[in-house]
Length: 51
Ligand SMILES: [Zn+2]
Ligand SMILES: [Zn+2]
Image (cartoon, rainbow, N blue to C red; front, side):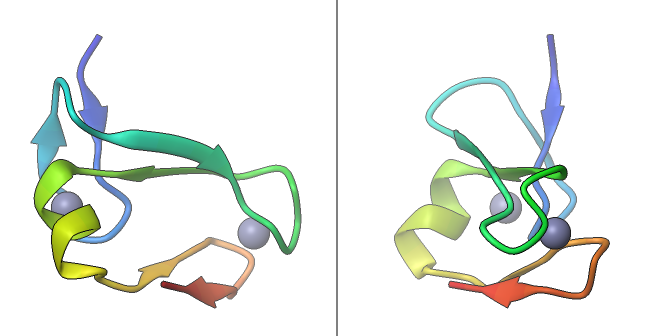
């Protein structure tokens, strides 16, 4: 299944990390390999921003 990166919106198949938002604990955050490497911020739908 293709996942969409929460930071850049790019579709990612492997090398991504997936975790729940530490703020709301509901939303799934997907970070692709390049965003992981660049430590790009993600924004959850609850408004939480994290590195
Ligand atoms: Zn990305
Ligand atoms: Zn959240």
